[in-house]
Length: 152
Image (cartoon, rainbow, N blue to C red; front, side, top):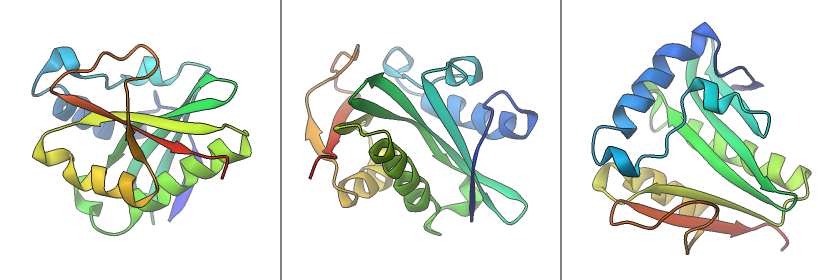
């Protein structure tokens, strides 16, 4: 596996990002906070792709909320690469970058329906715990929030 700092507007990302956005917006769209390519290109967001050989296997991002708090954004593993440890490798990379930046915590927002359970299990196994809404998020029956303390 190869993790690369990348451009979310690059052509090689387009199909997987479009799939991600369709999937994230297929339910209660007003509670979907998935970012499109232009939003992921914001200077406060670092975007990485993960490759399995020559194939794009997924992507993820880290948004700086303030000098000590980051947010995991837009984690997506391509369907053909699920169950291979790619999500864990990417999440570990994002956490390591947050630690390198000396963030005190890293948080994320995700869904509540059964399709989100594998991601939630991954986040919990990586030390994330349930928390209240953060940043500009509003709680709803369709989302939940997690955070991990990086100071210990």
